[in-house]
Image (cartoon, rainbow, N blue to C red; front, side):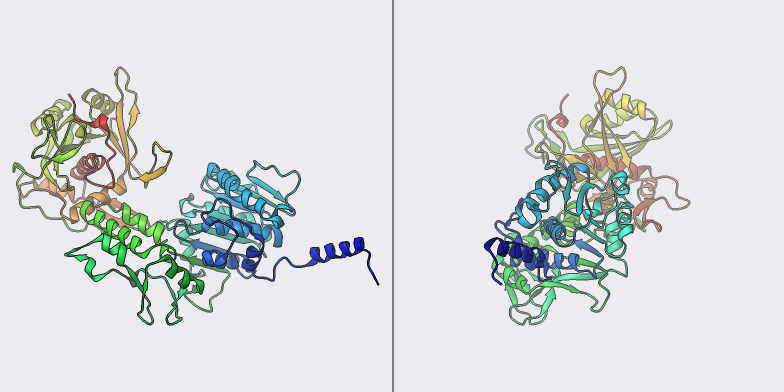
Amino acid sequence: MTLSPKSFELVRMGRDAMRPTTSGDPVEWLERNVPEIPDSHLKGPFRNERMPWVGDAVRFIVDPEVRQVLMPWCIQAGKSAALRLASAYFIVNDPGNMLLLQMNQDEADDFFLRQCRPLFDAIPEVAKRKKPDDMPRSSVGDFQRMIIYCRSAHTKTSLQRITTKYVFGDECWRWPKGHMEEAMGRTTQFSWNSKHVFASQGGTPTDDFHQLLEQPTTNLHDWCFNCTNCNTLQPYDWSFVRFPEDAKDGDDWDTAKVKAGTTYECRSCNSRHTDSRETRFELNLGGKFVPREPGKSIERVGLHLNALAMMSWGELGRMMLEAKRASVIYGDEEPRRIFKQKRLALAWSDDGGSMVTPIDSSDYSLKDDWTEEAVITPKAQVVAREGAPAGSIPFRTMGIDVQRGHFWATVRRWSKSGHSRLMAFEKVETWTGLDDLAKRMGVHKALVMVDSGDNTQTVYAECCRRGWKCSKGSGNDDFAITSSDGRTTRRFYSDPQAIVVPGQPTRASLVVFSAMAAKDLLHGLRTRKLHTYPRDASEDYAKQLNSEVRVKDKRTGKPMWILPQGVNDNHALDCEVLAMLVAVRWGVVGREATATAEDAPNG
């Protein structure tokens, strides 16, 4: 039977409609259908060899045997790309409503409008399934047999009103406690074929993402490369990174030589792979996610990926050494935390042990001169005392713990390197007595920090009169800080807040800080002998400074500092935290200086 051209065309169209869109391998489908990935550093069509872990992750997400995928990945490795590509695949090949969750609604809107919609529009197979009434500026995508809701993981109402087959989530370590479980509950009606996919950088051992990852039922996989010399499949492991021998400089490392000469050693044949993009490309070509326990159920899988798969090993070595240096010299654990969470994609927990024995005094006295003591110039620069310009003031900080009817105060000297010495610890009866102490010790008003947790309004008024700063400890882990260029970072204390004081022409300045993080930092400085006290310090000072111990809450697993039973006074410890906070703002302790020209010595 001979078909007319029109009939032939109808038959062809029917066959095309019935033909499977893929052979079963989602990577093959992506390579055939994705002409570009908008808002990606990878230009041109999807090619799996460029970031093969993305394609392998999509295979797990699509696999009908896999019900839940947890992706602890380093930053800039393609987490969001994997979520977007899997979403596109499901729109065409296995449609069903989807809840796509971001940290907050602003991030959700940005993610869907700037990253998801352009990708869906770029894929013809997806674009043609868009319904006519779909609204292009909405964070809800309407496709044939599939609606995608992009929502905030922070708002419980976003999680409770939608019934869906798929739940995808990004940066889940930042989600509020219990919200992952709430999100997963949205798939109850699809219990036989629903999927949960959660991606995140490293977080903390107690966040919901890592708690789920550590469940015995989670089948953990690591991204493994194939050694080009011996064909051994093995995970990227930091312990096999090799720094050049000539980079060792005494007890330190020459980071320039580390960056230029680092190699990676095969755990099987001991061959050294050179640090280059081409080398990593070849190693990853035969790579895949390999289970740590072969034969275990894949209903819930964890896919771990660290930065060794995609980033210069020498550059990572430099970053690690600088983070270690900040920890040793300044007691600043923040760079180490960032490296572990963002580069190694591991949960961060404080490595410092509990303070169970006192840290002994050092060999100097309260009244000794200290040639290393720094000064602050009128231009707000911390410099050595010798040769400092006129008008410079000694770098001496004063921390004041306010009690009902009296005060406790410490005065501490600081060097440029972050070393410090105790100068005074006294019980003071009045605000005038505090003025006298500051004058006698030569402490400038810009370097005084007063606890405002008790008798708050009086503290605000008295500090406002004197130009001193107020502070308040908080249970928060950290605070979001937005810079002038719009970037948001996190640190353990806030920017100064202006507090209106009735009857005062100026405002009080309040700095809120994480009590836990501040005490951790102080403990680190003390254990490294950077923060010391003299041999003639009072016995009461030593007892109060060593009054608290660091333990873990048995219920939550979170660390905390507590007063053991029978110990009542920790005033010296509280004062030292406040005195240290001033030094942190001036940059001699911690990652960066946040004091401004307004804090410069004047008057």
